[in-house]
Length: 285
Image 1 (tube, rainbow, N blue to C red):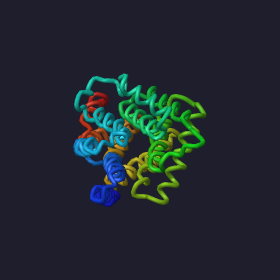
Image 2 (image 1 turned 90 degrees about the vertical axis):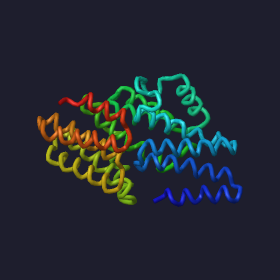
Image 3 (image 1 turned 60 degrees about the horizontal axis):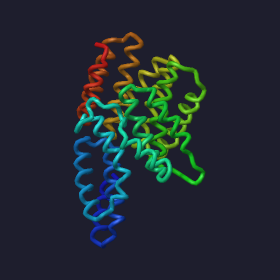
Image 4 (image 1 turned 90 degrees about the horizontal axis):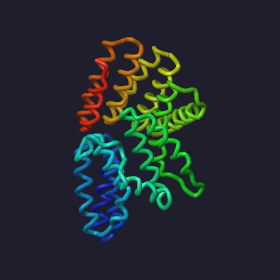
């Protein structure tokens, strides 16, 4: 629902010569399109279109926040040349992160969030955990992250923490997982269409971890349905994949196969072809 007024803001900004406001709106259009589950190739086209406008108006400084989102999409889609690369392993990205740590904490948090998210998606839990730990050291008493960024990061940190807790009893990850669920409870109470499915998925992960199998199965199904109802195809895909992992570990091979198939289809619908291929290769069938 926020995309239409953002488009209006962009057009009004251009019409009245408020270029920096127009470009800020364009940046938000791109980020919201990514977060809301639009097809990733469509989102990339928006990045390219508005990127040209940014250069035309010499407002490149406003566009730095888009760079990590574009990189993340490349890794999910395998476009244009990310098929065999470790996520953000290049000097350019590391240089961007060092810049962000010193001069742009919002950009820094975006980078940590997206690196953690992509690492989690591709089962690189070592990198994912490192991103969560480093981000927590980024705190600054004079810095407050935008609410949408804070909440989406807490969700990802929660997913990573629950996965790590299958192999460790480290109190740090328990604390992060519990804080994540508490944050999603608050958000879901105020904006259920955006956050209810996230809360349900974290609750499913908690039930999975603590052996509450009947609750876990129901919560995964509820998370999948809520994500689907509100158009969050990326979260629907993750919920399906996690449900497949849950049922596989409980020995329910036939049920697990069903959820893996749903996850694969959802990733393809999202346009995340590289992730779909990764899932197919990692599938135990």
